[in-house]
Length: 103
Image (cartoon, rainbow, N blue to C red; front, side):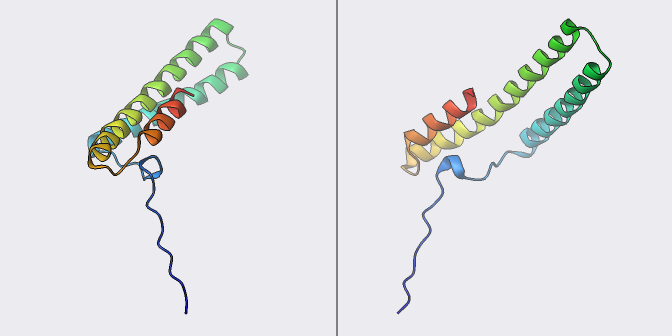
């Protein structure tokens, strides 16, 4: 007789990222802009631009990437809070994601 196994539900941290349409649009716009800035950094290095110029753009890229990560983390925390209140998530997932986001 075959045994059946049920898949354990994914933790909140492993659930697919679902953003509201406007938030998703903003995140994708930021990521596309970042993509262009990273290409700009490559060209700056190829062109031998000054360290100050390269590091200034690099700092901007890092800041924009962190802001984008913060937006995604905020959405996660909101959904995780709701799931914690319903008993469908655990605090460990939330702590792990916050640690991951701090890099």
